[in-house]
Length: 329
Ligand SMILES: C[S@@+](CC[C@H](N)C(=O)[O-])C[C@H]1O[C@@H](n2cnc3c(N)ncnc32)[C@H](O)[C@@H]1O
Figure 1 (cartoon, helix red, strand yellow):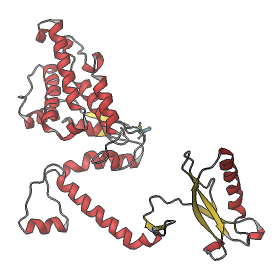
Figure 2 (cartoon, rainbow, N blue to C red; figure 1 turned 90 degrees about the vertical axis):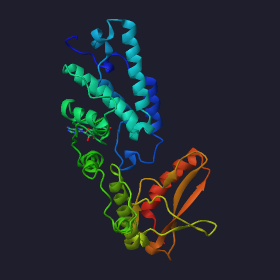
Figure 3 (cartoon, rainbow, N blue to C red; figure 1 turned 45 degrees about the vertical axis):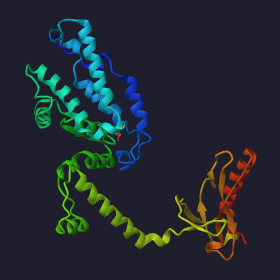
Figure 4 (cartoon, rainbow, N blue to C red; figure 1 turned 180 degrees about the vertical axis):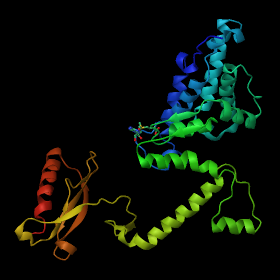
C-alpha cells in the first residue's frame, strides 16, 4: 500500500455520464429538492453524488498488491468503478436501494482497506450503513446553500453536516437532511390518515413517506385556509372573450401621491417600466387608462401586439412620465 492513497477523483471519473445526468436533472420537477424552495447556485445532485463517491473511493492504483501489480487489472478495476458511478448518477437511482447499496459498499471497502480491515458483506445493507456511520469520515459542507452536498452524503450512508450564513439555506438544509430521518418509518398523524388507520386501512410507511403525507395534507390545508381568508384579494381575470382565467402572476407596485398639483394628491404607482414581456412577436405591456369611474381615477389594461424597438422605447419613456402625471382629469 502506498503511503498516500490516490482517490478516484484524482485519476479519472466518467464525466460524460455525470454531465448528462446533471443536465437532465434541471428538467425534473416532481420530487426534486429544488421544488421545496428556490436556492441560488444549487448544485446538481448527480454531480454532488459522483464527486462525494470519487473522493472517498480509492483509485485502484493505490492498491497495487491487491491487483497483482498488473496495470491492466488496475485499469479494469477503474473501469468497473466508473460503471458504478454511471449507475449511481441518474435521477432514478436516487431511491434505488440496490444501486445505493452497491455504491455504499465501494466506499466502505476503501475505508476498510485503509484501516487494514475488510468491509461488511456486499449484500448486508444494514451492516454497510453501520460501518459507514461509524468508520467513514463525516462530510461537512460549511457553505451548504440548498443542501445538495449533505443530502447526497446522507444518501451514500455517511454522517452529513452542513451550515450556511443564510438562515433560509439553513432551514432548507434542515428540511432536507435533519428532519426527515427523525420521522423515518413513522405513519402520518393527520386526521384523515388516523381515521383510515382506525378503520383498518393499514399500510407500511417507508422512510419519510409518512412525513411526506403529512406535509401534503397540511400544505393543502394551508392553501385552502389562505384561499378562504385572502383569496378575494386575488380575483380571476376577465379575458377579452369574457371568460374567466386564473392569474398566474401578480406584479406589485408601491404607490405615492402624485407630486403634480393638477393630480390633486391622487395615488400613482411607482414602476420603472410597464412592459410585461419584451419577447419578439409576443410583446405585452400594461397601459394605464385614465378613468374617472375607477378607484384613484385610473385603471390598467394589459395589451399585446407587435411593437418596433423605437415604439417600445417611446412607450417605456411615455409610461414612465405618465406614471407621474397619470391622474390629470
Ligand atoms: C454556491 S452556494 C452553495 C450551493 C450549494 N453547494 C448547493 O448545492 O445548494 C454558496 C453558499 O455559501 C453561503 N455563504 C457565503 N458566505 C458564507 C460564509 N462566510 N459563511 C457561511 N456561508 C456562506 C451562501 O449563503 C450560499 O448559500
